[in-house]
Image (cartoon, rainbow, N blue to C red; front, side):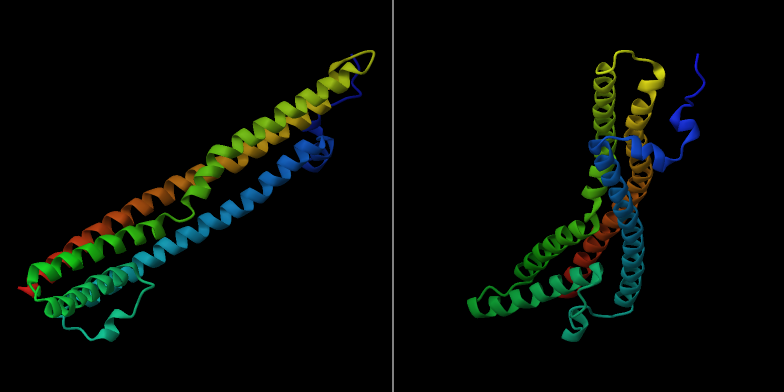
Length: 232
């Protein structure tokens, strides 16, 4: 058996293996590399965003606890929208006083009428902030599930191309087939290298997101209770 050929994956670097890929394999591999860079940027950015929002939320909640009457706070205290807790507070209190103004005009100004509008505003703000927490998570989930399939597509295509090239030759051997097959396998490796880190990152971010959403729901419930107590 001739020893002139040494398996490419054992003797060549990634660039040489990439050069043996057909155009489809090179396109898929390059695309996966781009997706990997974007995914890492999204994961780090999302992690920092969630940690920052939680820190701001806790600081704002401590501020509200130090206030004796939330409904009597000046309107300037309701201008902060970049903090999720502040956004819920602003929408709830604004809806409360808007309902009070409308109720006086129509003779419907009751505590129950105000509270219903405040609670509805809380629910809308809660849903909006939940979407904010979950932003970019669909992209990561798509990378986790799609990258291996893209890699598999590249491998199947590359193997098919390698066998087609061998069929055109009079004689076929492992030395002529192995380079094409080895290059085709690069796309599967690329898909897994993209999907595996994204899977761990996605699960970590999903756990953080669920925790923040639970904290947001508890805060909304606590805020509704406090507004109800102050309105009686």
